[in-house]
Image (cartoon, rainbow, N blue to C red; front, side, top):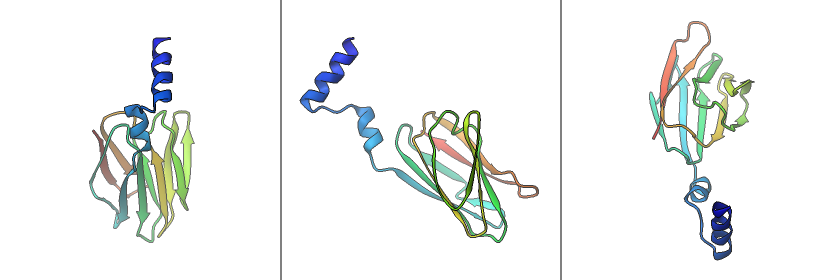
Length: 133
């Protein structure tokens, strides 16, 4: 109960928690471009616990996939745009982005580390990374 009392006292006195401030902070917004069978930039950096928006644009005539490996496990991801998101038992799995299409992913990174993302369509061999600090 001491934690609840402290939270109630902080609420009544108008104090804010650093966790609340982080979640209420303006999001880190990063654009990733799929073009000529590559992702740019090759490395994206996000901050742990801070809201993030990834905008993935497909500038090609081909369909592309954005498949973040392990980044979104047990993380709430809001998906917007004209991409087709896919989910599995651990949550968000990938989004297919049509030619000249766009997908926007909103989330809060929960785990620090380096996470790779790929386009898993046959013959595309596209790979880059997201670093969460």
